[in-house]
Length: 166
Ligand code: PNS
Image (cartoon, rainbow, N blue to C red; front, side):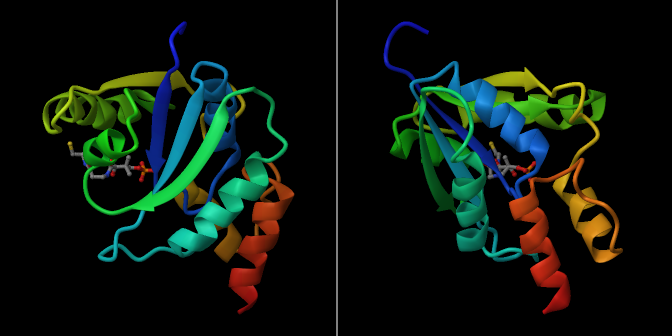
């Protein structure tokens, strides 16, 4: 991308996984600014609060490679609306599987049409070592006391252990 470019990477990030970090590192190489947006959905029960999820995202992205500026926020409502608010021209999403594509494609088409400005989605294929990872699996493994190092960073693992023991 030659002109100054900004993308948002929306998600639940409950919690951030090695898969998310892979997408963030790669997207950061493509855009001047990557705005990471944590969905705050009061109707959906989450393990971590939006503030905790942002805190983990901040700490775990601190050592990532890439020159792009990282911004963080939480949001309610529509991704396309937030994209317009922060003046992002693109949405970034990772794709792990055909099941992801079935969910993501209608969302990408909708995001082009449901906001005031047309916003394109850029898909990054999940890395071979992370395509099996999801936050819901991570929460399940943490609750069952399983090994988490393949799924999350040590900082996130510590936060998960903190939740299990509280
Ligand atoms: O990490 P997730 O849970 O797969 O992320 C899903 C997310 C947050 C990207 C998606 O649910 C979303 O964009 N929600 C906000 C509401 C919205 O804009 N929906 C699309 C309608 S066009």
